Figure 1 (cartoon, rainbow, N blue to C red):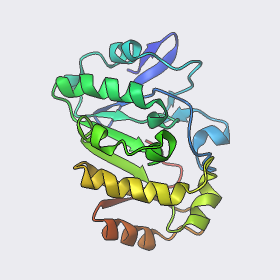
Figure 2: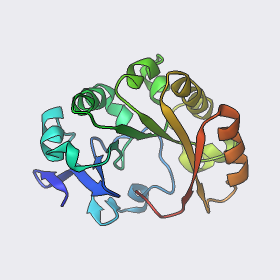
Figure 3: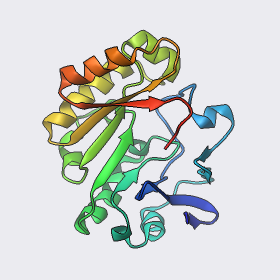
Figure 4: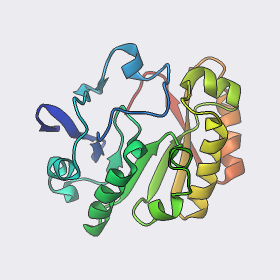
Length: 204
């Protein structure tokens, strides 16, 4: 069962993992994102947030973390938009021996204006970064970034995250117009990180 606070789902279970919904804000405006297609549902969970939850509310929603294989920061917003909150929760989860993953657009360094990967590496085990496209033109078409230089910043973040010691994978959605999955795989190979092919409209 999803854990709610004032009817908001802050923690939900998928694949034996506990997924955390800590913000609805995002650095991108992806055309394929459910929320830009008038739904906030992910695998029947309504992830609408009327306000951003506190650290204590999220911790309460998790309950006993050892029921899960992994703690995953992933809602319909970009979790690193609340970087300090993410880090505080991750520290608490690591202190209980949990594995922590962040599903991210990889733009936190661009937003924060500094390299945060050394800090993240202290409490985050895995990063799944949305590559989304093999070049900036296709990336901009589908993700509509709010900041200039987002594509290069995302690739640089992936490189720095790997160097900091985190287990990094890039992902792209097969089925989006112009997205070359093989070319995306080659980018991941060049960076020395894993690659995951995602399926259009299969979120979570």
